[in-house]
Amino acid sequence: MKCKICGKDSGKFVVCYKHRTTKYKAKCKIHGTTWFIGRQCQKCAELKKPIYEIKNKKDRFGNVINKGHYLYPFLNRLTHKTRAYQRKYIQRISHSSGIYGIFCGTTCLYVGQSVDISTRVQQHKDNFIKAQKQLQGIRIRKKRIALDKVKKKVEFKYYQLAHDYKLSELTFKKLMAVPKLNDDFEYNELLTYAEQAMIDSYKPKFNHIAARPTKK
Image (cartoon, rainbow, N blue to C red):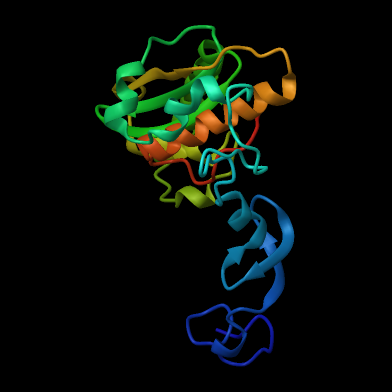
């Protein structure tokens, strides 16, 4: 293989040893043409870094979480990041906002946030079925094709799920209820802190990036 930067032989690597930490332009499946270091898209690498974490009782901006802070009532849930502590709060899926998890048995597959968990879960099921039908069509035509080569109709995680599991094997659970706050910014921040806490607690198999705000 030729080094992406200098063109010299780099063996099985994208860049040679000299340029292992040098940025170069390449195409990311998610972000298009952007900066890479080695094989890693730097925008993807940034999304993998947790930023919605509470450290030393301070929020991500360095503000102390005291009794007047919007995160204060949820401090225990956001800082006790173990499954043993969190699982006693699991509830049935409903149309409330909060954090949900997709499970197969005791294995956590995915954690997400939503302003309407029940509606979001149905979207997951619909997308799972779309991916499943597409993969079945490929198998019927006896084509052997890697998952990352499939022409995507839904997000990649649904192909991973449909490839490894049946919909009947999956269970959906509300991991943390998040009440609607009057301030939209604080509400979205709380949802995202809660999602990161549940990701850290349950260590889901298919969450490839850290928690970020979403409108779903």
